[in-house]
Amino acid sequence: MAADQGGPNANGANAQPVSREKILHALASLMANKDAAYVAGVRSRAAKGNLQIKGQSITEDIVDEALTRLPKAEEKPKPAVEVTPAATGARWTPSSASIASIVSKALMECEDAEQYMERIKVVGESKVPVLPKPDVTTTPTGEFLCAEEWAETVARMVNRKDGRVYVRLQNYSGWVSSRSRNDYNKVVLDVEEGRPSLEPGSAQVIATSRAMRLLPHMTQDGYQTSNTSGTKVRRFRTTVMAPILQSAD
Image (cartoon, rainbow, N blue to C red; front, side):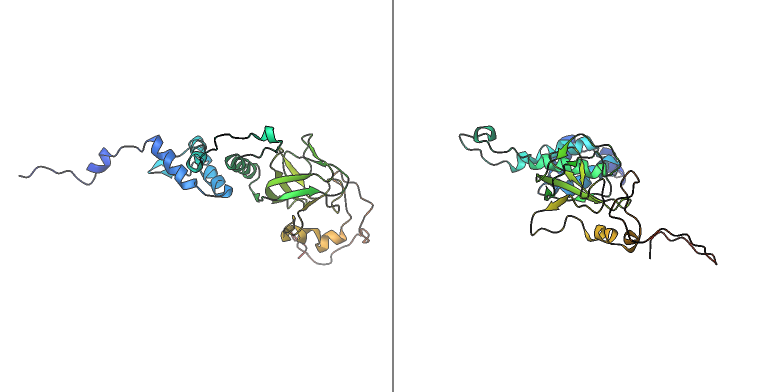
């Protein structure tokens, strides 16, 4: 009688787990030449436990270790004498890996944020406070963007609660609002000339909605501003049952 050659599970029983080195190599190849949003998505899946390779669960620290290998794969030969930024007086800029980590952090700070790589400028003479979160009611971090100052951004989000657009700064640990904290109608940030508007169409709809034109303008503390609506507050009574709508539509 012929010897038993093994059933269908013979190979599965002898299967060996994939080594950490091979996993790191596979992740580095997967994220090579990908943009920051893609890398952020991989890290997010790993953080939630939804990333696997060959049946093995991949943690966030493994993804971070794989990210450190990306510059080595793209490294170019260095000149014999390398001039440092300090010697030339040039401004230091973070590497692509650093920018990717900042973008990833911004997207983790706010789930509704999107990648937004632009240069913004403070318009007007007032300083713009840096906020820890994209929320005008939070206490500022103590940092400010000064008048006429330019800054780099990595992410953007539209806050549906207050209608403001917030951008995450690259060189500051926080967010800034496109509109004044005290006066919603005052725009305090702008982009370079020729670039798309800082505030997307969805935010502009909120700013110019019929309800915004009818309601009095209030500060974040609930005080009515001088630039108020011409419509006076009135009381009314319904004669039939009327549903309350979520929006003025």
